[in-house]
Length: 196
Image 1 (spheres, helix red, strand yellow):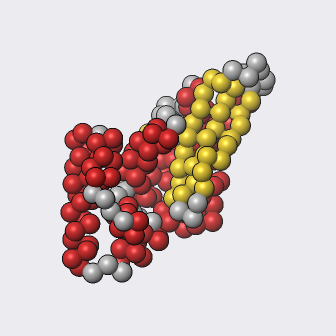
Image 2: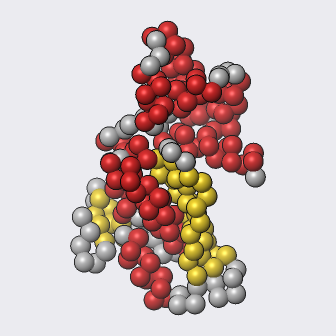
């Protein structure tokens, strides 16, 4: 838990809350701007971007964050707010206001919660449960192959392999639930680079 100092001790490491980082930022850089932007939002996920610029408008740091609505009870109603807070924390860390660790206390606590309580995306999880056992085995086998490629060759190769399977949209929804949020995030970034 955070005390009045804005420092949280998690597994023996000290992390600063985003609120404390924002306070330090405002005190040290009164003329800098800190803005946030909604990158994308749908029924499953919210992606936010935070940007810090100097008084001339030159961008000095950015931070991104994504939150899945099904990942926690809080995210069911507040995924946007959590994503924004994390993006701000990451931008401040990139500017040099990271404290002892790059991640904020909020991000670390959320990551620990998600590791202890992994949940598939709700829609994808429901679709997975509706599959028969042969379909589950077939898709799980592909997911295991993709995971192995992701770990050994990286997200670009993993996405290539996944796309080569020529899955229909329902199968894609189902297989996506087999990956952790970190795995989904790594592979999504490959697609985002293709679009950019």
